[in-house]
Length: 287
Ligand SMILES: [Zn+2]
Image (tube, rainbow, N blue to C red; front, side, top):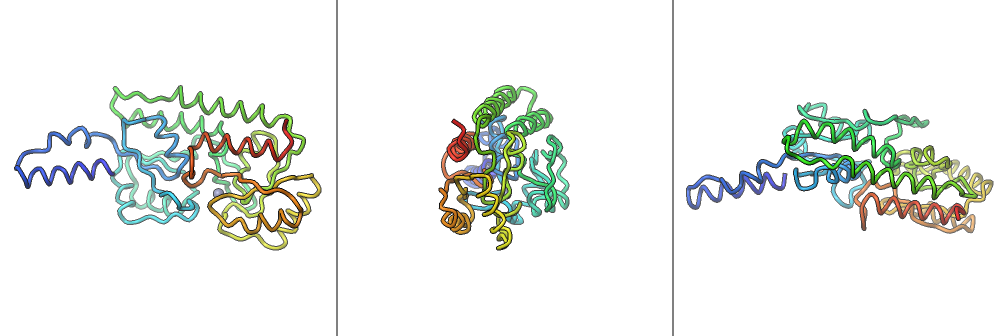
């Protein structure tokens, strides 16, 4: 949108000032607009297209994506974008906007992966498995071919290879862990746990905004003791009070395990995932 808007504003100015056309803006206006719903989808789409399209995310820095709300301007963007890349079942506002505006070109990346179910329903945290990210990259790349000019260079091989390297590093990095159980702040890591044969014992459920019950906290306390857990993980975007209280009770360490839902404060998907791997290795005795 930022480019298109600039193009239109520039065009209006040029017309009113000198009465000429807007030839200078043609290139800018020709760049396809791709709307992405989450940070992970922005990351992978941007890696694929580089500067060949405008990739605009519906989430903004500092927003916890589970409770994303859309402005009417964003709904309009969804309706008029050249491509909408989203994940059904994660953000209700996006699902509703896609259903209401039914954009011509849309990809639901859930179609590229196998969803896991939890007691609360389908688990949306598919991006925390690098193998899933490789599948998602391929699916988006195939859709991009129908949107970008035929001359476009879509970096699918490089992007998939980077996710494969990340997966290989996770697999080797977590293979020897003495402790297989970890305690994250909310239930974001089921895909990661399944892929690398760990067991997540989350404090809160799928939605980090729903506070855990006292019974749940007591249960996590028990399991952490039983499995020799050394560290209680918290995350930047939600309150760390329960994690810190639990760690204090159990005399355990605290550390960050980032679900890569919001924009990272530093780095990007890959560097945050590598920091998560290092944190899991420290916590679980994987030397
Ligand atoms: Zn989450």
